Amino acid sequence: MRRSVLEHVATGVAAVGLAVVSLALEPGPIRALDVLFAAFLYTFLLLGLRFGVRAVRDALRAGRLAADVEHRTVADVVGPALREERARMAADVGAVVHRALSDVRAMVLSLSTAPDDAVPEILREVQRRGRTAVTELRRMVGLLRAADPAPHDPPSVAASTATLRRPDVVLTVVTVLVCLVETTAGAVSGELATDYGLRVGPVSVLLTLLAAAAVVLWRVNPALGTTVQGVLATLGLVVGSPLLVGGWAVLAFCPTLWRCVARARAGWPTVVGPVLLVTATLASQWRFFRENTEILAVVYAATVATALVVRLGEVRRGRATARVASRRALLDDAARRALLDDRRALARDLHDTVSGSVGVIVVQAGAAELHWDLRRDQAMESLAAVRTSVDTALEELDALTARLGAGDGAVHRGVPELDRLVERMRSAGLTIRTEIAVDGGSVDAETATCLFRVAQEGLANAARHAPGSAVSLVLHRVGDAVELTLDDDGAPRADGTGEPGFGLVSLAERVERLGGRLTAGARGDGSGFVLRARLTSRRPATSGGTGHVGTPT
Image (tube, rainbow, N blue to C red; front, side):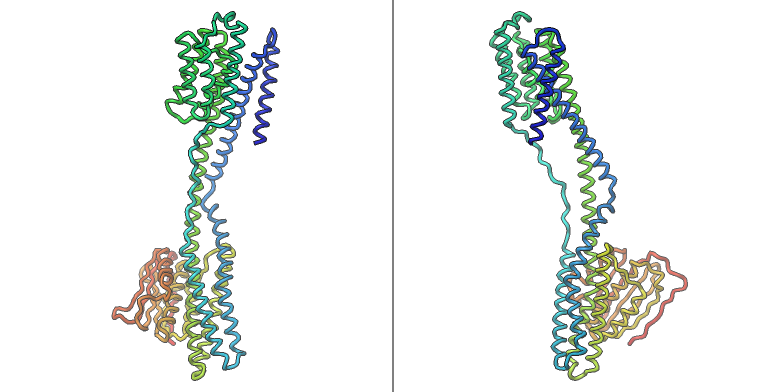
């Protein structure tokens, strides 16, 4: 605000200086009214020039910004957003799930030194902590799947409604006072009667004062202001009582004309008002004050020229701003969708890497507690399965958080890891027969990881919901596709996840994202459970695949 006031003061001082200098170069004495007129004229011209320069500068700046934003790619915006989001996710996972699993691991390790009578209590605590980890996992997975970043709508810009302000009233009062002073001075001195042969009548004075007062509309409705001034000038021309144009005209006509050309909304009033004002006042000057016609024409030309510069600059700036807003909305939407996809992918990875292992931990800890007093050998086997599952879950979770912390959300597993997965689940009490007739090198990384997750989830579900059952795991090619089938002979069940909304939903999303198909349900005779995934591998099969058949144990 202070800077704006200083700029206006500097403009006024410069205008007065220019007025004095220009009049000093003219022969004859310098009159106060002439200095006033010239000062008003130079003030307005300097203001118009300043606004014009500012409009051009803002338009160029907006154009550069638009060019910069349009050259940005989706990757430029999504990359930093994903890295930041993944780092935050890694911290959240470490603080919640990893801590719970670490507590379980510490308790499992303490079993080797604990007295026999304390082991059942520790096993019960392991089960409790395991269920707590599952609860926290469900909560986190649920939050990640439900988190849908709302699209960022560009801020709505309300249509600016000009209102009458105090400076407008001040300008109007000053204009009317200057007009009254000039008109009175001209009548008293006899200048109008001597130089132009006119008698100052009440009609001319009234029309002149009304035209000066119409400047109050210059901000609120400039089209109406120029129209009113044009009508008054036309009326004075018709009845032979012209407007007594002087320095006040610069204060009254130039603001309304400039505002109408530079800022008013396009439409016929915006054209009619300025045309009527310019035509009527120039015609009146030509008829009654011919020697002043050229001065007024120059004033109008400068006013319209600076106004057009401002209008064109603001049009270009508006278009550039619209381009920026459109491009940013597109980039923001792409970033939103990428974050949503990444959160869902993390939800799948969290569920697939941890849920199965934690489920086995709880089941086997319960089995160890049950058999501790009577069947110590089976209890020890269950404890071994618990230790293996805890280590596996922490290993998987560490790999996931490490990749997230590095800005990479992908944790890849392949066909070779299926053997280790099968061995772990066998130690958890499952009887598993494997038939892997696909070479790991013939399947691309994403497809191999998806197959691994399907096998991991299917075996974990069998361990939780059908302990002691026999499971068949078959991986082979069907034409161009790779098909994985898990078939267990346990009791029939409607859902293989034990966590409605996450297990099969997560697998289905994984498979469908790669263009595959997942089916799950009971066998044809209503017994057991069959989980089957078929995907098209994007890497051609090699001619010498090294499949193998595993024996049940």
